[in-house]
Length: 138
Image (cartoon, rainbow, N blue to C red; front, side, top):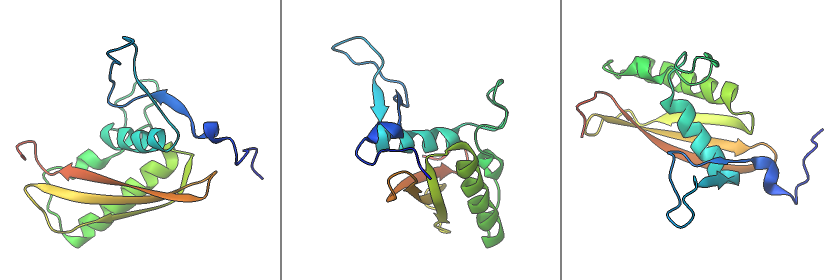
């Protein structure tokens, strides 16, 4: 079973805040922890292209291959599956990941709704990720 103590939420992790920020009072990098750290991790996975990290070429997602592509239902289904698989393979703290993409493009942007369960806590959380279909989007 699990080695986690349900009363100790430090197992959810702590790390540098993404995007990186400096605490003006201390001059140190700000950190995030627990649920916020998981959400930032998922965002980082989606914003990193596979092979972008030299020492971890499998880290990241292949979402950028969908830029400038027609958004028919088949493509959205494939995109949804890819996002789900990329999160599952890169973020071990979550499970039961579901991805729903609003098929209506608004101002060159698709809205990606990601629901997941934090594995050790068995609590649900979500992330809304805007995916811009072209670099000129507002």
